[in-house]
Image 1 (cartoon, chains in turn yellow, purple):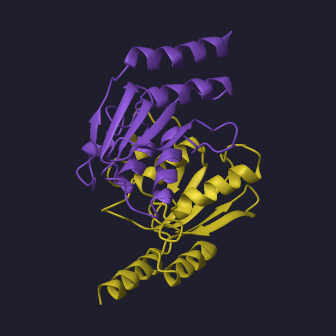
Image 2 (cartoon, rainbow over the protein chains, first blue to last red):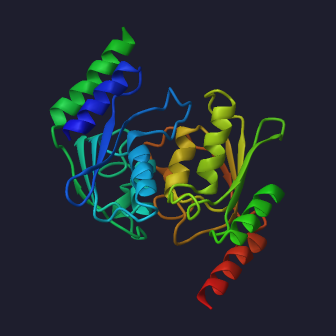
Length: 144
Length: 144
């Protein structure tokens, strides 16, 4: 989660919504790390989670990620949660809950759907205050 | 939809699940076209829809796609439907319905969620038989 937090802070300095992610393999090794690149890449799908899942799968030549843990500073949105199903992510550990835009504990609750083909184990609220403060500071500054 | 169908057929010949997409701008001009590349790119997120939305947004330097129509041969999955919200797609026209994996008329019904920030107009079932036949033929052949 330290790496995900560092990526979120780096994203903030680039003017991106400060969300960061890291993908850890079965021995805890970091397979990929990324921050939000939506603005820089002109790509609304360039969320931190999408980037690390894609990078890790490419690195492993296509193997799915059932033995991996995705660390991310904010509750994944429905797009990223549904992508985590396609990538067969084993476990997701996230920081702040996102009642407005989240898709794991809020909104469509992607993994709770009857037709969901794969349900990652999820742990929410890890270092929630710190992750939430990063986002609040960013948006408070944007509004000035 | 002709282009999306052609992309689906081309995907099938590459051994990919035959789904194709085309993204049309406000005057009906084709901004992007793509077929599934999940296997070839070792990327479970490389659905046809994701590719055309990303390509079109890059092409337009980041402008969202509210004046565009996404044509796709199969009902978008929850990941692609949620991505269409991020990209602010104006309209989605899809072919076959997907009761198992769809996310528009089935499963999480992404656009029907109370917190959904943008709801594309959707038209389902266009050339449904033809789009469905492509998928059935592909899977029947895979099982032989």
